[in-house]
Length: 496
Image 1 (cartoon, rainbow, N blue to C red):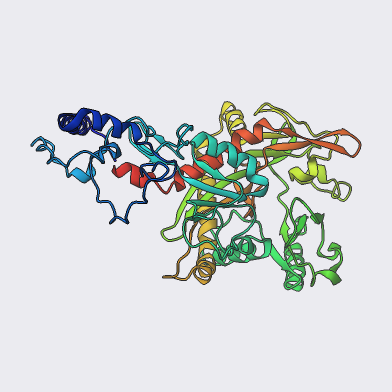
Image 2: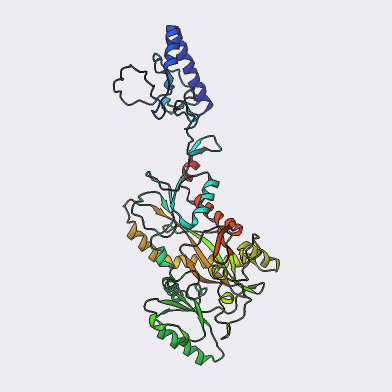
């Protein structure tokens, strides 16, 4: 409730008149009565009874009133007329705090101070309830989430809560039948939809319908289902253009962090064809002419917030990470195909290279901010607005390709009319800039790493976690801004 100066003056006048009336009746009796009144902690303002006093009879529920709890013994007196300029009902008035009450007007326990309220006072002086966040399943994103919650001055529940929370932050996937309200940071079905095979099929459908609009995804085939098609198409193209000497990259469908990825020059080089049934994969045409910085290949990890499916709302973080290879790049040839530190930008692979550079600077080292790359390109005359425009277009079109099946997953888990949370999710888009600055989509991650530290090897086999300032700068901002966008109390505060 808002506490206007008029209301405080009115409450003070009522209190003064009530005390004066009691004093006229019997000053000694009033003083004795006031001396016996105290407030029991957690009793919602009930007076404490002395030993030997009879238990009072059950009372009807208290009606809203403007007077203080301390005026219980004062004879009732009709309130004065409210000023005509600001008429308000008596129930809406908030009495000024008196002795025995906290600053929020709540009872204070004997021998204890006020209990800290889970909220804060806004710019207009109104006390605001803090947004509650259940972080009990946050896992690797926990530290960045904790920092973000502290910066927003929200309330975190690291071990869960019996009462519902406003936001539930999960580390891996959406599978929780116990959440019936609030917001969850995962969409049902998202992990399945961005797996390499599913993503490839979704984008290829759109490439068939809109080839010019979806030319940001490399030509790809699904193994083992399309192994024969892959072999045939490559042979046909080579016969038509003998100078074409392509390289292909094989990515296991369920792989992550560079696991199982390798390069080939010919379909006959595919390894372990007999086991593809148990571990299917995607094979793509390898991008041989990437943009290089300091003679090194790099990719871009951009963070994208899918806020809503209906209506479709997408937000792209202003900054991301650039992950660098640790060996100078050369175009693929039979001699260097196995050089993973030259061709694969995965952080989890290159961190094991002797050439990996940990740096606290955003513009140096093997992991840098994307904004530092843009600044460097801008200094060389590159049209940064065009680069950003192409990246934004790529992100939007990719999400559109995934949306139809995502809606099916969503309505299966949370049918219309059934109680359930609303969903949002941060996605990690891995993008490669070609030499001509055209962005190409590599893959989409449903659970991008939000760790803000890295492992440092103290001695062979002995590691410790060391804070990464580059990761913290980017990832804390991503989580904090996501929470701001999903703030469930934002609209309520704006309408007050």
